[in-house]
Image 1: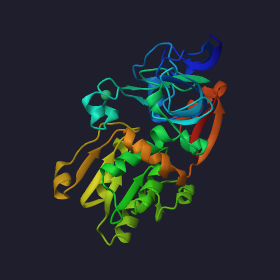
Image 2 (image 1 turned 90 degrees about the vertical axis):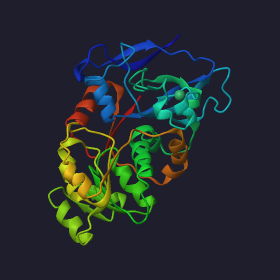
Image 3 (image 1 turned 180 degrees about the vertical axis):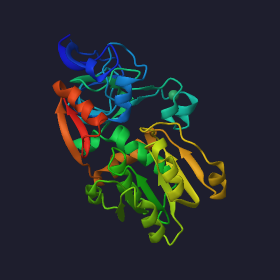
Length: 331
Ligand SMILES: [Zn+2]
């Protein structure tokens, strides 16, 4: 087999990431080989490199990417070489009870590409054919679809966000935050983007406010009612703020904990405000298919696109928050 270039590591840590030549992966009957066109960095990728148990080792990270089909197995009919495809980056068997219920995220034989299998920070990757779908969406959208767009979309659906809602987005400039604003607007909600970055206004929220003034501004805007939905994907440091911003009968959604996952729950506030807490995790195939249409209307803010050889700088920029928009990789 010819070689390809890929990012690999054997021991944890950004410092241990290396660009190496490795054999190209082989294609099985029901698989497709993709040339990766663009990948991105999300918290799960940093966690893979620093803390998670990954396999196999040496490991190729990369949980979010898209590509063009180079080769298909004998049993593959729905895509052909040359097709640009979106990739649902969670493996699922399609036959367990969770899959049959449409909950592919909870497939009993499920795996996360880039965590429990080799990922997309490489020139090539082989994935099951059922995980790819033809798409003409723009590059940055396709490279954001599997996690950064899918996760907030699923969360807003589970919260049944509708035109009567006032949705507060904490971390509005983040990977998922920029899409949350736009998706909540598409669902008809009024959106308050909480961020220190002025450019989040480019995603057309109704209000942009910083963390210091968020409570006061939302109180005034809602005449004291506060938000019906607060999305806190940031974790423990923003837990108390989320409870301050949510109104009676409100919902607080979380799907991430980048500042830590040990929050203190004031049970009195929970029941006195009649609050519903919703935890969600990525999204299912049905959500993904819906997004193949919806996502054409989404905008992305790109900070930088790195080459594979600059992987350490890319990860350090992500970890230290030195960025104004998404970080992509172009193999
Ligand atoms: Zn399954």
